[in-house]
Length: 89
Image (cartoon, rainbow, N blue to C red; front, side, top):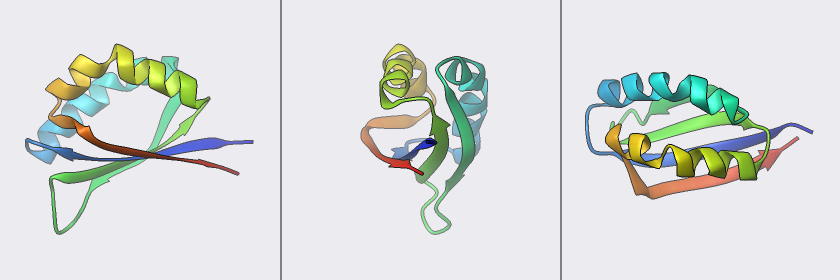
């Protein structure tokens, strides 16, 4: 059964600056079983972003978020705005 996470959040900088930092974190995310499927910003609100990822488990994703928390925050991602919804199929 495949597992997915839809991560919605706000950023406090330019989307393209956030995206550069996001790309640099991908090798570490993959080591935690997280593979990005899509990321983007809302057309009418570029400070609202979303990432859809295939994940091994919620636990491994949470481990990544904790271990990379400082760099995620430095990317412009406002951590306290994060909403995660998990899906399976």
